[in-house]
Length: 110
Image 1 (cartoon, helix red, strand yellow):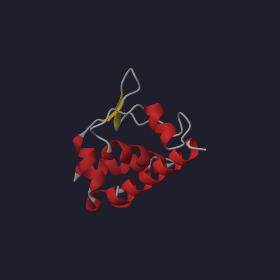
Image 2 (cartoon, one colour; image 1 turned 90 degrees about the vertical axis):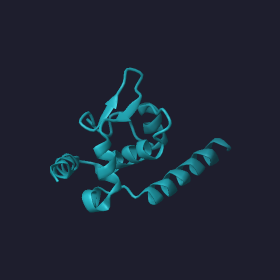
Image 3 (cartoon, one colour; image 1 turned 45 degrees about the vertical axis):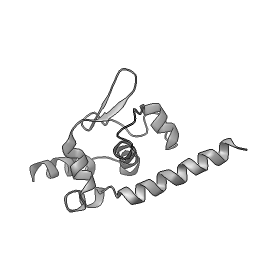
Image 4 (cartoon, one colour; image 1 turned 135 degrees about the horizontal axis):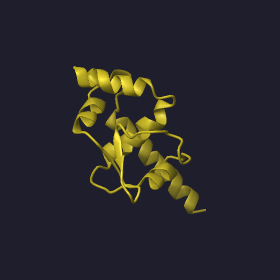
């Protein structure tokens, strides 16, 4: 598919892919919540700007709210036959994010 080739090309050009996949995973998993970029960066322990330019994949609004631009990106990322090394495994990502929540709760309770 041409769209798979396009997304693969975009992701292959990313210098540090894991933070990008973390952000996209969080957006996919929590798509019913309104997330803002600074909140995501803090949750993932990223510095502002660590990820670089995601403008071809997401829209960042005036209040720093972030949304995936195209449903085809979600389809691509959640299907390992299409995304291959860029596949987002929902079970794995849920586990990572749950662990991160527990870490943050533990830090704030001290």
